[in-house]
Image (cartoon, rainbow, N blue to C red):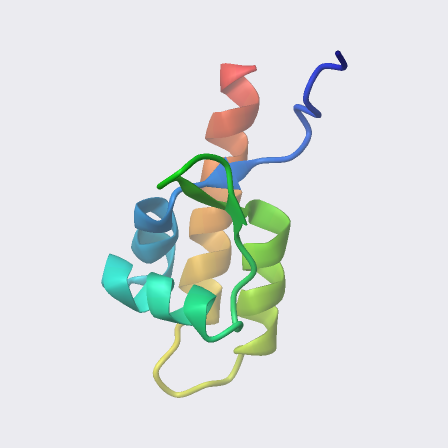
Length: 86
């Protein structure tokens, strides 16, 4: 059995909601309608890769309801924190 790739950072819907400054239910809506890619890692467990979140943020840069710069800064903080955990 091979070891999982530690270079992939996975986030919970709640962590993504914090980055995007939206309600976790909004994140679930983005996943359900296909705007945000997520993977099921268990029966009720969903995760979003940091790379997929970055793509989502970039595709919404300039939207009046979305602060892409703040989201980018938050993602950089998460990436740094997760890197220190390894």
